[in-house]
Length: 351
Image (tube, rainbow, N blue to C red):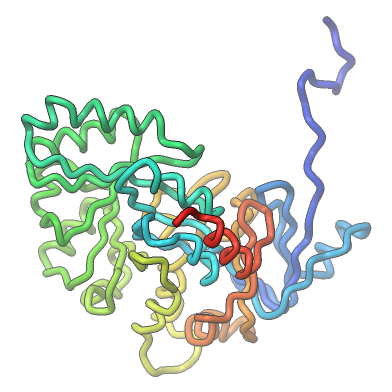
């Protein structure tokens, strides 16, 4: 049936615009904006800029006015999903690299309102068991996992043949890999084809120079889960992120690595980028429409509000050193949430 020009079949009305303002907006990908605003439509950011400009563009709206600063949602790049992920948003976390030991745990991140990637863990001990039923069980789990988010694989088999097949499966299905280096050396992972930009690793201890070089060459990001693990990784040559494993505060973990110095040091910025943009890069979600870890046009509307005062010069240092424990709200996919919401969500979870 013909239609009139300009009228498309099956189109829906656009979501309303919501404007969020704060004394400071820290996009990470762009310079800080003093007295700034973020305009959101649905689950996407459509504009960032000075508050007066944004409010003038949408004069009929009543903005949500926040204290302190608006920053991209933090990314926890290593979280066991059986460790109450509902607590994560209290710290400003909006996305996680969640490792699930079973299908029940795999749904917990989505239930907690968190984005990111859910990694299905496989520990198949040997090739015979893998060939008999391990591969089929994993493929079935990938297809049946009970949430609509992004799925990956956490390969933790001691068998090199199984690990190699898991690396092949990840490429075949277009799935990301996430591995704990305490279980497998970097050289072993490279031999089985697991390392690369489609994989990130979690470490709890320092890497030697050869391993750091290998990860850098392969473009593999590193999730730091202990202050001791940061040795040799703060030079900006390897993409770093922070993982808490148990749903802790990645910003506090980053703060533990600060050094005395003037506000606005390069290290402070690197550490803030690690808990935002670095985490998004580890999950393969730092680019394109719906990207995480930074705020800009068409990025996903995931951000956190911290009750911290700062200006353009001190923004990164103030967030890093004063931000832990001072998150007052998160916006996930355009929807505002306050810390109390997460305690209610956790209380509803079965014992």
